[in-house]
Image 1: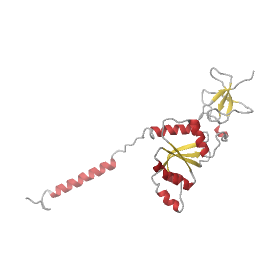
Image 2: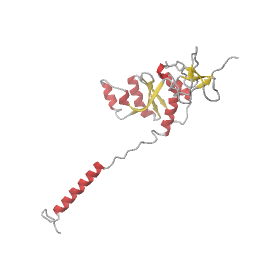
Image 3: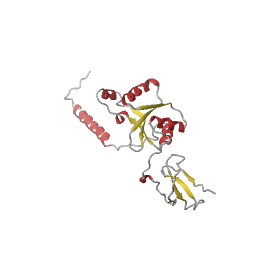
Image 4: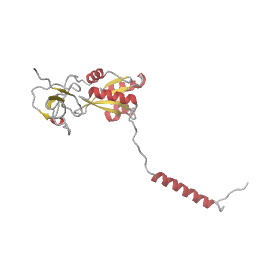
Length: 229
């Protein structure tokens, strides 16, 4: 068997070639163009379905943040820090906050088995935070969902949130509606916010008075004013 020694004439060219090849690979990895793209769509179909139903149910009073890290919602002191470390990579499926001041009112766990959810029950109980659990299904009764979530958040579903002057509906081009003074305002049948009286200046109902939701364009609830006689 022939042994190749370090003074062999092919050793040096082979070593130089290997080093050059390694440098080429490193430069290619560092300088190659970045290829990024958005994940479409976000979340799985069951998650999106529940998020849409939940948003419709409580949007008048609450705002929903999906898939939030536990560490962004809770902070620990003393032994609580050790407990939170167990949830370092965990997320709440939905965090329900007050629409005005962003206070966290409750969290929601969607699906999962009893054993996996038990640790979330212990965590939320330690934090004094309400945890709601729902099974995965394609459709659920939105009014019942609204009643359950608002009740868990300590909100009377018939209690209307206060409106701010800046939240009056923005007028859109082509929809030239004039706001008028009115004594009493009905509540929007869709979101339960107060409605404002407008006069329609375009279309088949030109000149008629119409009640429009004060949250327009976020809510498009509207109804013609009934005239007595």
